Image 1 (cartoon, rainbow, N blue to C red):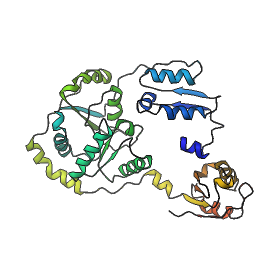
Image 2 (cartoon, rainbow, N blue to C red):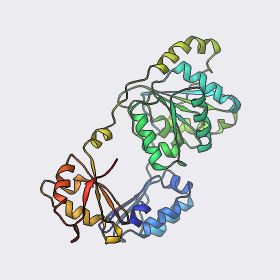
Image 3 (cartoon, one colour):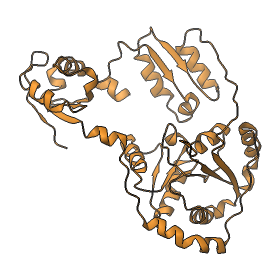
Image 4 (cartoon, rainbow, N blue to C red):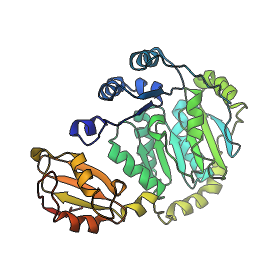
Length: 349
């Protein structure tokens, strides 16, 4: 967001609403300075809403600083989780968790599975071990570039791999219907995180399974989570060696059977996107609004047909959506932008 504001590719003049969601998690990750930098650049005449599962002092301070006489609304939690999820606890020592994870995966044999860890370092460790076992997997955490996270998520949606190792923050907002299993490799410290994690499965009318590893020193968090969701989580025994042995062949067969990649909706839309190159940018005093205003005046084209605009010093790239690329390309060969006639080509991939 800050990058777009600095480039001038995000117009803020008509902004009417600011929503800060998951405020406590954003502040816990040290994003407070970035959030404040964005707020300072927004119009003062706006509606501001802040949502947070908890209300630590930093969040209250932020609301008092940037909201005018805010109304405090507290929603009582129902503590409910969908009845489409079967919940289980596995008691395990920290030193044994990787071995137990392997055995649980073999016996459960998921079609697709989220594995949640508490830290990015733990995500890296578990992901490396899955790769060493030749399990088709990938990882996602806040230490990765956003573009890399998007690439991983799109691959998971397409079914390119079965196991995704993730931190809580990186996995928030992910909406995939076909997750069969969630494994909490690290016990969630907050009750809300348990619901967020396990809610990745049991969607679209399908039954899912949530398996949570708990070590002896993590029992202190269990009662709070069970009180929050409204039931006791039954315990599952660690798979025996005999059980693992009996399930090994079926597991290996599924691993070898690579599913046909699914086409993400975004990919289908991307087929209708054409990226155009213009030989003018910041040094010619051109802004995103200049391109939008000019292109949207072409007959048969609206602002909704214009995608991402990237303005560089000497060039600008504009994505044209909905199959309108050829129309815009032809029209712009004889159309000026801010009085300047620019050369326009289809951009190289």
